[in-house]
Amino acid sequence: MKKPVKIIHDCDPGHDDAVAILMAAVHPSIELKAVTVVAGNQTIEKTAVNALNVCSASGRCKNVPVSAGMSRPIVRRQVTAGDIHGVSGLDGPSFGLPDIELDPRHAVDLMIEILLSSDGDITVVPTGPLTNVAMALRREPRIAEKIERIVLMGGAYQLGNVTPSAEFNMYADPEAAHIVFTCGRPIVMMGLDVTRKARATPDVIARVKSLGNPQAVLFAEMMEFFAKTQREIYGWDGPPLHDPTTMAWLIDPGCVETKPMRVEIELRGELAYGRTCCDFFGLENSPDSRGGAMSGIQSVLDRPKGANALVAVDIDAARFWDIVYETFAMYGK
Image (cartoon, rainbow, N blue to C red; front, side, top):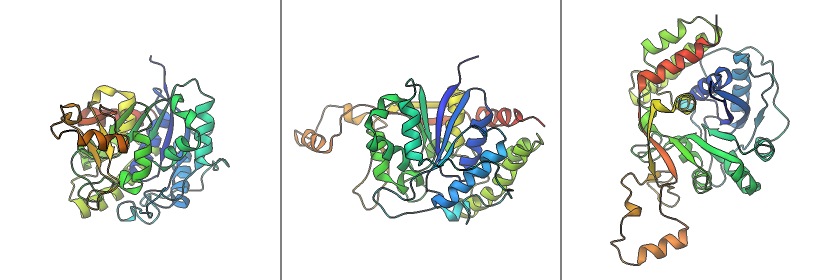
């Protein structure tokens, strides 16, 4: 059996974040070192409570620190996704009182502490806005060399979901995304291009629910609410399960096809603010047909050529749902 991947899961629960937490908490291929929480789908007060509730519901997080972090983006005004995730950020299921408490450390400090004390074998898995990760990189630049890789959910090389151009996590804090994508560490980007193919249809929900354990029932309750808002806004036959694609990739990278690309974050455009500009065709590696002007622009903006991320371009949806099912089956009856 392969050695488990040590991860810090940085998230903003969120229905799909919650499923990702439940997967990371139980699967033997993943060693969950911490859950760090950021504002995103809802305010930090709400996403922190949601993280505690989900970690408690897993029954596997007694020794996993859960810490609240950044309450707002670095530059832009705050946006949330209450229209998708509800007033609480995790509407639908009912939770009792959590049996764990928030770690007193700020999430940024906790992230720095874990990384600096590591052997450079920690994978950071952000499934919300990248504010915590960016602030940690700025506060303590030495952590960059301690990050084995960053496997994130966010962005798209095609269509956005909060604007025609931008995906929510990137749009919620584009400046943070710029810091992360220019940090020099290996990045795997699970964008909307693949997550929209991983939809929790009624058959999928019923299959997981049939396992009968409390975590599988919780999955179904979350997906039933999530399905309603996604159907009303986007017309989906089932909600895209965005964030768990990161955990599925860690468990079985073969379930997702990736392509090396140069990814840059649009920070100046009015219509494309927060867009992940992905060089799908490798155009920045092509001979410059625009004379010497482009090289000057690149120098000013610190935009070296070459791929800086593996961008997901396709997913074996059937295999993905098998991974989700098999993972929830690990909770037993």
